[in-house]
Length: 97
Length: 526
Image (cartoon, rainbow over all chains, first blue to last red; front, side):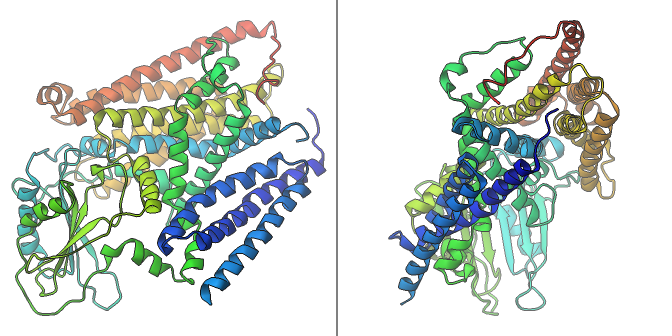
């Protein structure tokens, strides 16, 4: 049987963590951004945001395993997270004032 | 993982499917059984007679009973009987001793014709499969979380599977029987693609059902951390008025049914809630029957003043986003489905279960081939083999044992309902032990044969332990009861065939093994 190098195992673990945890954060931030931006009644916007979040999660997971390296997987989640966090923060702040 | 996109998705499909496959198999099988939850409960409590009484008559019966037995309760809940669930269920909640506490609930099942309490044997019935399907016999909320996580993995496995499988429709028409590993792969693809819309719907909707539990960030953001305000807005009818502490006679409830039907242009009432019965501030909330339409509306209710019978309010029409969420819920539950559609749901559910099962078999089969010549299997493959056997055939033995326990355990045994559930888990546990001590194929054959025996003999067992055997139920046209027996018999025949088939191919394999054949599956779908 072929021996699998430790670096490969670590890279797979890193991708799994990125997909599960990073993917959840992207999905949650996407749902918040959408909820705060769609022009709907509050409860409807929440429902829309929550329903859509799973598609964001799915996309994030696929990205984590499709990209070339584990580093790119993380980068591809951190950048959209920051953007979505900025959008949600801005929308939240504008909604309060 | 340096290869192309499709290979990467094949890897994801393989491993996500393996790690969660055993759990998903159990979730799919019990969920499929739950489509016949009421029919299973009927078989497991055959003493409860099926009556056809109008909603008005049974509601009057319920009101009389509750006025006699639960006059001082803070709340009554009445579930009206319907075609699938013939029992009239009444529950009441005691006024809590202290404010803010939850009062204790009492539940009784009534005969809708006579109003007498019905004493069925203690059992969880079909409710067991329904609850296990999403709670996995774990304390709240862990089971719900785990099953929702499994649903997300299922979603990922489905989509990555579709991407992997490029020639989806061309391959659909290729089924190569009696080719061992190849036939399993063809079968996996065929059941996967054939009911693909069902798979996508059932998986995505399961996420939607628990979305406010697993993805609450947007509720907190939109309601400034006050999740309660969100639920009050979505379910407006659930808020109960304060007690006036002045006694007043409750109006007759039966005429309210007609008034509610007018509001819903003919929709039926599923459940009634009476808040503060016997008080001047009594209110009656009528909730629409979920079987009425596909789109489920949790809030859809009409509220009346309990003393004057005056209409207090109706919930507004569902908005589009909530109607979409409601239709996912409705489609998943299938409450609206009539007999034909219900069977279709059942068959689709079985196809999903079979897809997961064949996937697990393929994973192991491909890796076993590499070790066909060595006498000892590596530990990880042996582990997967044991888990495969116990999670598939072992689970089916356990399901059969659950039904057997219902007929074999004494009717007046203490803790009877719990012991039915215990027998399910004890037998499931024993199947793990059995799979560990026997060789792979032998364990499969023996467990499948046991499943065949237990299911095939179910009508006989029923005839020996109750007076409701097939001769009676078929003649009476009690299709729930007869259908259960016949389905068990059919499953018994199927599993006997499966066991026989395994035995034969096991013998054939010994002959083939002498001339080891090259397998080129890796190239196509890893």
